[in-house]
Image (tube, rainbow, N blue to C red):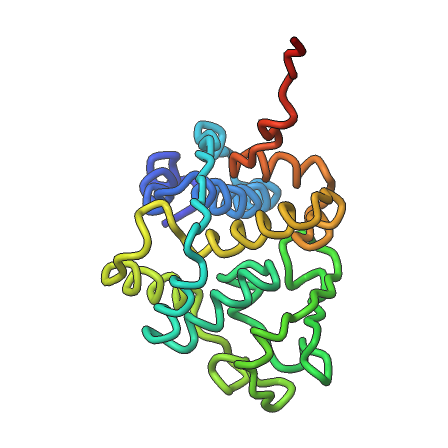
Length: 236
């Protein structure tokens, strides 16, 4: 198809394959870059002008109130999913890229920490994350460049953990539709905040760009800040 024959209808037809606002907007940005380059090369019109970004709906990843039971059930279901969920909860890394692409070289020699460079995580900054012992108990160090799940340099495909989670979810009686893989990360965040009461520590653990992001994150999880003893007292 010649560039001059490319219309917004063609592009919309392609973009409609992406059901979520986030995916739609990401692909839209990529297409925008290509179209702008085509215009520089002589294309006379811009079919992207009529295609607006979609508003991404906020998703509440319901935290677990039975985290140990869920982890134990997943342990029986699948080893790789179990390790992924443990690292999502205990190290607060994101499952679909940060964890899926982990290789043994990302770990310290004694496996007590993970070092991710800026291009490997969403924040764009280098992160050093402690690895709790309950995770280290399941780690058997391999060759530095090998992925921790595949045992080879190449990681599993992008949908690997998404597919495993969907299969687990169908047979589990412990979770509901609002639970996602990110629920482990959110549950870990709640645990840190409840034990430390420190927004600064939570921000560092989550790799957020600012405390404001972390505060918004906690509000989204409906963390209660007030207790009964905090409320006004009526003196007689």
